[in-house]
Image (tube, rainbow, N blue to C red):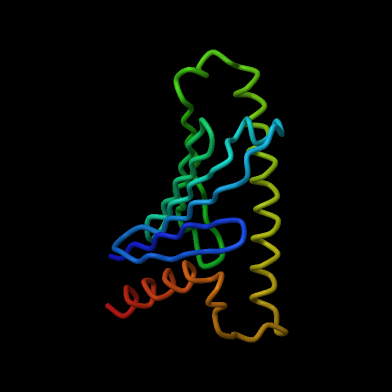
Length: 149
């Protein structure tokens, strides 16, 4: 098993390699914008090969467990965790979950469009972009290694 750790800044991306985890840490600028106050100015995304993700931002953490249903389908099981001091703030929780659902629907639309593009006769494979696709390349190398076994 392999770990990739990425520290992602607004203008650059750094990669450190280890053993079973892909980690992206995104730092933003301080702001009074309500969205950033709600989510915090930093986010941590961890991907445990092959199908488990942890997203940490502000007082929230969620996990995504991806279950394959076939070559082109999957089910994602989401679990949400919140810092204890916000347990009684139902307005905050409801607004956060609504926003999360909106973002998830946007992500689904993008992922489905990418998949359609990859299956299109117009698409031809190419090289990975070394500045932004290190984690994807690493994931594909792990998949290849496991499929060869």
